[in-house]
Length: 371
Image 1 (cartoon, helix red, strand yellow):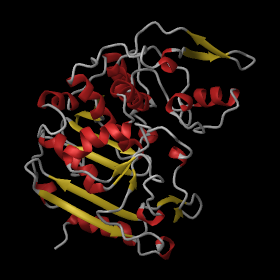
Image 2 (spheres, rainbow, N blue to C red; image 1 turned 30 degrees about the vertical axis):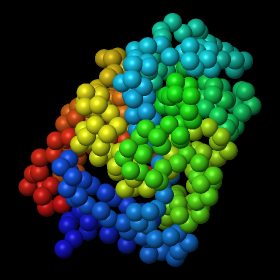
Image 3 (cartoon, helix red, strand yellow; image 1 turned 45 degrees about the vertical axis):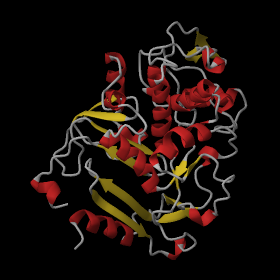
Image 4 (tube, one colour; image 1 turned 30 degrees about the horizontal axis):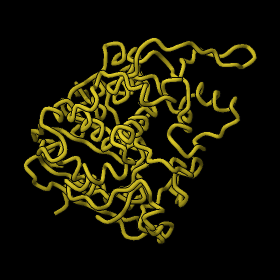
């Protein structure tokens, strides 16, 4: 018999609220709570293969989690420290000055950076980096350079952008994890795909993760078709060309470039949830479930979350947030909604409407038992 939660999901499919659903849920002891794959009945999506455990999804920002894990492995090996300045390894990032505004003639006003940029800053989005597609000032800088947004093939070319503030003194969601991926490549002398395959995915038994979809010769209908909602009719329509995030890239973009299946990504989440030692030491995983922002940076994050429209997902009133070394940390639950997240739940999402949640302690209530 379908649970209340499963009924909600099936109703969403029947109403064409979403084109497909793929969800896996597992307890820390390994018990599988849910494994559900649903397809749209609409002929609009008839070219899509059945959504199942083999479907590849465009991970977008879900890619940030394995990239963060790869960086933390370098910390465990003593190759780099969380609070080491990393700019000597990333010369393009080192050259970036801080954007102060624009002169009357439109020329950017820049000042020299005085604080170091550390790995901790990069992992927690407090380094001062941003995305040109979501920041008006950076978009203006790109326009002045005559460059189209997201048109460059490498991390160093695409994110050759000024900083928005002194590292460690504020907070802004941006391209810092792409720089982390590049850092891992430099430290290990491997491209990110090769490194992750050897040190993350193989230990987890994962065979389907890639940054190079075309090079893997994946058929178009193997990849979940994206959809968008028409502004006028509010109806879904296929977006077969997908998002332009990875168009023309030659680098492995550690903040946005991955593709994987739900069960394969779940292997990573479960390893961290169970703290099984396969990819990170227990004490390192503990750091993933702790906040790492300075008071000033945390304050800015929480102000931005007062209007969370910039993020993908549902964020409940009254929640207090921090940023860990791998995602958004809910330090204080807010809403009494049965689907709200508990204390110290780690979450994040991607632009393609994908989400992950990791909560180390889940205590069922009378409400959640009915779901």
